Image 1 (cartoon, one colour):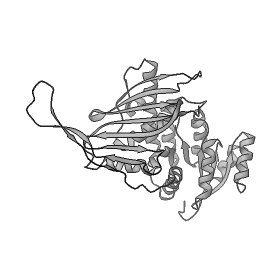
Image 2: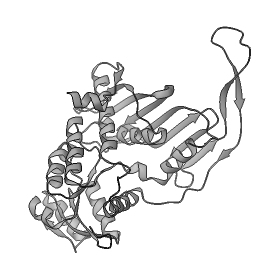
Image 3: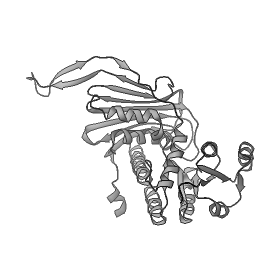
Image 4: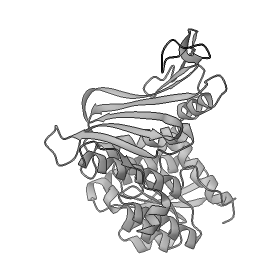
Length: 348
């Protein structure tokens, strides 16, 4: 495709995220929002009222015939079937997270995108948050030292999803952040979940991810907590860094404090002399930007230049493997479960 041309974008699904994608792509000059596909008439009417210049398509074929790229923002259980149709038509695809609910389906979409030479990107929006980008930068700096563990909390009163549980809805964000910040994937997980709100899906979960080099990540997610929290803390040997997505003034705070073992003669087996470091607290300036707009602009750039997205299909498949291991751990009474390797999934 000529990089000087505007990419024609169609959106399938006009729920909360679908409406957000309609808004963002209508604002980006490098794209041309052509229309939407949504079975719910009131949602269609609402979308056309806000975006009168676009068209409401009644069937998939008509939309695919005119679009260069498609956003799929339908319920997670439908992602695989809808995404297959988009990729089979040779259209570039931006699909909301999670990419699918099964590892095999996600891998099939990756293979199909490669066969059709289409860009496949998944909407792991937090990796396009300026605060998360800064978090990774500071964790990778020499001043941070050795990473010990990550603690993430993502709680609120709902909104309660009808298609997936709180783990798939909320923990997906923190898993992608942890993988991104650490530059690695966990080898095993353990988790407990509960259904306090009377529905058929877990609305609260406590998850521990075990990464290489003995790095831990603990994640707490809940639809039942009246205190809204969106916080990720990374603790290292020299610093503790906190990313608070709800703090618009100081989203990143760096605590120059830490505890490190030092070489010394020990008094008893297994004991080391510890050195305490106590320093200042810094709040670096983070330029405000909208993560979803950053994500959409990245998608357009990848299509125009033939680049691999930051949150490509392979990244998304890794997230699904972790989520499936969490599911098994919850079902098995919090037993530690290995994260399936790519080779193991291909061998099934």
